[in-house]
Length: 398
Ligand code: NDP
Ligand code: MG
Image (cartoon, rainbow, N blue to C red; front, side, top):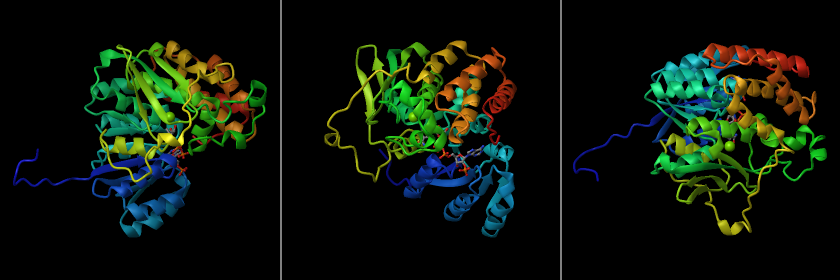
């Protein structure tokens, strides 16, 4: 209870968003705009969509706007200097910005490996992390969790499954957890045969049945590598052994994930598929903020179904147990090869099954490092990108 005659001054949470122009970034800004007394966006960073970044900066008036693509810098500066908004360009500027004193929480919503170095810098600067960029924990989960253990800050997951598990664990003794059950929609090819999957087009793969997301994660959902990544993410986020993490296909995407306890109880978090719920929960320091969306009406759903994932049809699923058993830089190799292979598939240079094929080729070709340093991860990433570019004939922007 609040003591009488005491006035509380509520300071808004200051937020940096890495990847503000993307799917998670724009939904984060939507949440911020609904709670202007609670949240303020003070740093916005994007890849190359300078027009959208300018639009966002004009609306949200951050102290700093950063564009990773340096060729777009002049346009950004010319548009924002008259408004007194500081500007910068390049991935180094994004990482350096993590030490600024004008925010306390960073939403990491860039795609792929690009999230790693800024997140490492943000942890070292004791910023709270609202983690959407799961690849950070895929590439270097062991190192990132070690850094977290040495720091005074924490990660609150934005990924819907991990947010669900986080919510299920509130008030529970970690020693009583039996297993984590991560749900998966199964993607657009859940009911396809192996033969049908072999010839799918990028247009088909980009059509996710439940979630509207960026292109890369949509393809990862179609191959189900996204689920393998989420198992790796859960292993590090919740400090749990891989044999106690299970994936289950739940095509309706209403149960976002579950936790089974030693007494046989299973807790689940349910909701409509809308990323603004886990974003609100993470920005609100793992607390509940009101939603203006229509709540879940279970009567709208005739049935909620659950089935075992099919590793024969979706071999990328096998990469989670493989990577976690092998350890070292294995998951870093998988992630980098996949970044190129996904682009190659989208550009029509390789077939859908060749995404998995490219990853396994890279795993055979790139030297294994058992205890990688941050520099080793950086080198492994570069080497794998270049190997897979050569393999697929597709160049990506680093
Ligand atoms: P999008 O492709 O929609 O957006 C990515 C954002 O990152 C854009 O702002 C893009 O800038 C920026 N970006 C891309 N590359 C770089 C780079 N090299 N340096 C700096 N910025 C970069 O992706 P999503 O929002 O869908 O996904 C973001 C992350 O969140 C991913 O890790 C994904 O796995 C995770 N996630 C997403 C979910 C979703 O529902 N979308 C759900 C759960 C997790 P620009 O467009 O200006 O080039
Ligand atoms: Mg997810």
